[in-house]
Image (spheres, rainbow, N blue to C red):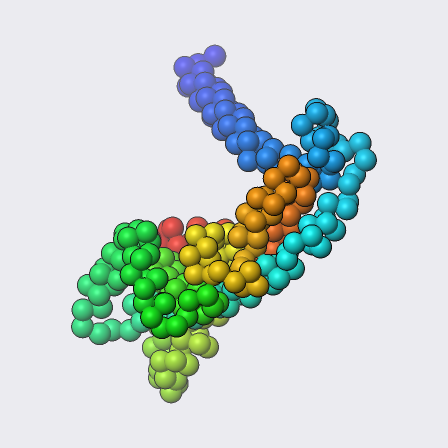
Length: 284
């Protein structure tokens, strides 16, 4: 065996060992992330005394009534509808406002555009806890405390969303906009008819991020909402845990129900989500 052959064989063995280690690492991470979800799913179908006494993850007698009880024993349907309403409205608003800002910062030319964008981007470094109290005072002075409008107004804009969409739009050929201007399109027509259809992957990415954030948000609804009929599902689950602290089966059933829209949104947009993140990362 020549030295070149030995070197080539050794190189292939190293690559195979490296791929095997990466595969084992990824499998371990997958198990770490999936096991809690499977345990939650199993516990949601068990009687309370069976959850911690049995080592089997398969229920002896599946208690489907946990799912019925969680919808009937508290104001769960109202919490659910409130969260869907806020998530859909805020996500739609953010898609519009962020795409408008991204279009202006990437396709329009005006003095100080890039410097203004840097200042706008710098606001992302300010933690929400630092502006929480001033924001609350302003919202209350506007008479929007204890209304859904308070949460909608607070979350209608996103610096991160504008940044994400801008990076994607920068990768689109400028010739498309110039050709549309020659054909007589104004800026809004170029934005709506040319750029927006081409930005689907990044829009899907922003949709998933925003919808998930609003759905799981706990702090803002706790600050701005006090009426029980206005509360979201995260506040409802907290109330449920404090009321039925020993009923882990019911708590897990409620948690599983709260995850269904998030999983549905991810399943619907995951193809565009991967493409959008990869493209934005390459262009960033």
